Image (cartoon, rainbow over all chains, first blue to last red; front, top):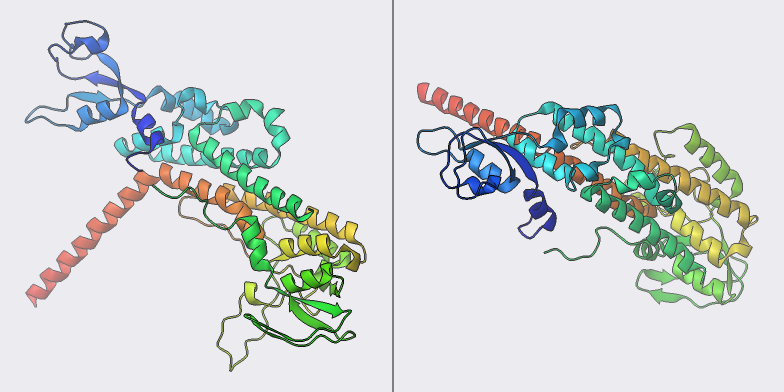
Amino acid sequence: MSYYDVDAILTDAQKVPCTFELTVPGLGYIEGNMGGDMKQGSKVELPLWLGEMLALSQSLNTSSLVTLDPPAALAPRVLNALKADPRTVDLRALAPHFYNLGARILELFEEEEMIEILSETFKARAAVIADQAHNPRGALGEGADFMRGLEENERQLFRAAHESAKSVRAWMADLKK
Amino acid sequence: MALPLPRGLTPSEVSFLCEMELVTVTPRQRLEGLALLGGPIKPLNPPHRASLPLWLALLLKRQRRANILPPPWLSPHSLTAILDHETEYADAFSPPPRLPPQPSSNTLPFSPPFLLGATADAAPDALPYHWLELGEMLLEAASDDFEDPDNVRKLLRGLREVRMAKLRTNVEKLDAGGGVKMNGIGGLEVGEGRAFVTGVIDGLRKIAASQEQQRKDRDRYEGTGDNYDDDEMEMDT
């Protein structure tokens, strides 16, 4: 991941639920409580980069400041739906950078099963994407709902597959001139 | 940041490479020998067949100075047989032409791009590396040299569809460290499939990156542990 990678930056900006383990004076504005304190045990949605930093930083002798929970996009309910049928889930509505978010979360939590589910989902959806990329009519017809649910990585994959098929067709049309 | 050029070869680059393949022609006019960078070309005498690079053959064909003999695998009969084989075995491509016996004195490697796959004496039952490009170019420039060009064109389209569909379904068997068996795949197909297949592998590796990192860490940890043991044993002895 490059420093200037827009997708990485946008992934970092996704919100994750965090629970404060300590009372922090004057931080209440994050919750919308102007000028108040951040109470111990309050749950706030923080951007991934901030939540990660606060969760990993350890002050001298206390435990970490906040604890992270997996975001709603990777909740067990979603994972079960993906296990049942990866093709019908609208990943874009869950998170525009679903797989990137998943990869970042997996760096923080150790979940063998989540890796398994995400890989299977990606493969199953990639096969459909390839078919859609080669039959452009499908993208407008019955596949439109699926195409709208593609997240950012999948869109790039679709674009790559579509471009290469298009360039071969263009080359063949060029021969006829 | 990286150049915005796509990885791999574009179709026109692949077809450019394909133009160095030798094809068999029957000249209609005399032509003196040419000294080309790729090697000298013998003088052309009308009734005798000769092997020329595809680009030169196409040029002579366009000037009506030669007829191109399509390779034997580009006949409706062979293509139908190959297409049957492709549809019968859903999990592999039809095998590439068999390699010639390695000449003992010659140590140059014989691999598909450098084999004679398009001359009149090529193997009739297998698709060489540049099958799709060569077939399309010959059908375009020399369709009157084919017995049944429309049928050949239709069969080529069918073959292309079947094989691309195989390449796409193969990704379901991929995993972050795995590969796809692509024996017998052609140059243009590699170019077309590359962006998609590498995209899938990159995505899978990204998802499994944490697992990979863990495994690496564990290996390194165990590796240093072994070294430590070794050191200790040396000290003991």
